[in-house]
Structures are given as C-alpha cells and as structure tokens.
Amino acid sequence: MTLSASQRGWGKGWPKDRSGEMLWVKAFRSGAKWQVHREVAPILHKIVNDAEARGFLFDHGPADTNDDWGYANRPIGGTRTPSNHSWGLAVDINAQDYPQGQRRRVPPQWLISLFAEYGWAWGGTWSHADPMHFEYTGTPHDARRTVARIAGTPPAPTPTKLPVRQALVIGARGRLVEIAQWELAVISGAQFPGEVGIYWGFLEHALVNLGKVLGKSWDGHTLGAEQWSAIDFIYLSKGHAPVTS
Image (cartoon, rainbow, N blue to C red; front, side, top):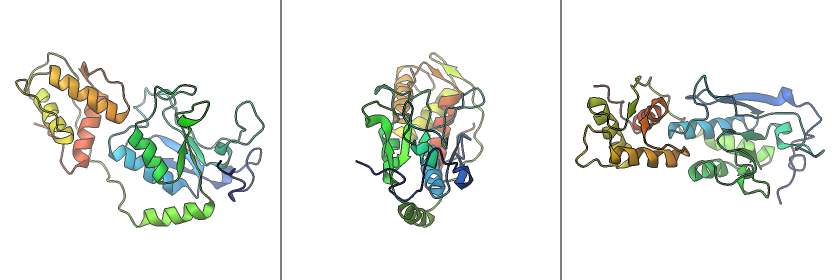
C-alpha cells in the first residue's frame, strides 16, 4: 500500500492551504493546464508535452469543457481524508472522456505507461475506478532526482503551425483525400489499394485504428478538424512538414 503524502515528506494536506507551493503546467499544443506542486511541475510538464508530441490532445479547442484539474484543497469525496489534490500531487485528465466509476472508457495504455515511467499511479485500477486520475507516488527527494534526469533529455518539439484542412466525409475524392492517405501511410503504415484519392473503406479503417491509438472513439466516417490535427501533428513529429499541395 502506498504511503500517504504526509508520510512521504510532503507535509500536511487538507485543510492546510498549500496554494503558495503550486505552479501552473500548460500543454504546449492544446493549451490544457493544471496547477500542481512546484516539485512535480517539471515532471508533469514532461509527461503532457511528450504525450501531445505523440498526437494525444488534453483539450479540443474553445468549445471543449475544461475537464483537466490539479490542485484543490479538499478531502477525498465522502471522507475527511486529505485528497492528493490538496498537496498538488494529483491531476485529472479529460474527465468527460474518462469518467469515474467505469472501466470501459480509459486513456490509451501507452499514456498510462508514460505517467508510470515518471512515478505517477493511475486511478483506473482502484476498486472504485477513477480512470481520469493520476497521482505522484514518490517523495520530494524522488521528484528532485526525476527532474534532474529530465533536465538531461531533449525537450518535446515545438510544433510548426498546422494548415487548416477542409472536413471530408466518406465518398469524397481528390487531392485532399490523397494527402490524408499519404500522411496516414507514413505514420501508421496504412495502405489504400485501389482507393488512392478516394475516401472509402481503407481510409475509414485507418482513421478508426488511429483513434484507438489516441484513445478516441472515431467512427471513421468523417475526417474533421480533430482528425486532421492529429494526423498532421504526428506526421510533423516524425520530422516531416505537413503536405499542403
């Protein structure tokens, strides 16, 4: 059983106000942000920006509800036990996509593993599943050692401005369909025999598969702004510039 944050050297949690020890962490691509303890802020920064460099989005634009949370001076719901959020050692991500109390809609396994690599436990395995939730399990000394290790690794790449793409639906034809197929072939190995320049079964299948990798339930029937953004960004992260003509 994991020791409480106070037993690991983080001091007292709720109801003690620790807001003065918090820093904001912002995802470079989507703009999602969390307030967390200053000792773990560089670690979370590394995790979320590496995830977004791989095409995962923590926010989906102005119309998206703010469902990414960090520091909150409160107890665990229904108890008087301090929540790890009250130390700034816990975050919730994409709460609408990964609600509490279920195990079907969860983050992709590679993202869970990425958090675990840096000492963050996932709430999806708890008896009352909380798949949106991740919390830091180390000591302040552990955090400082991890931050030092991160400082010796290259930062996540800063993205180039992506082109604005027209939405496509099944049955569409033309150069824009070819561009989507080309970029998907490069990033995923997808092939489109007999359908080059035609939005049909192979492109639909490739979009569904990419959505699964990113933890999204894409039906493949539409190639809209969210899908284009992910395809272009992953293509760019492999060292290519998005195809524009």
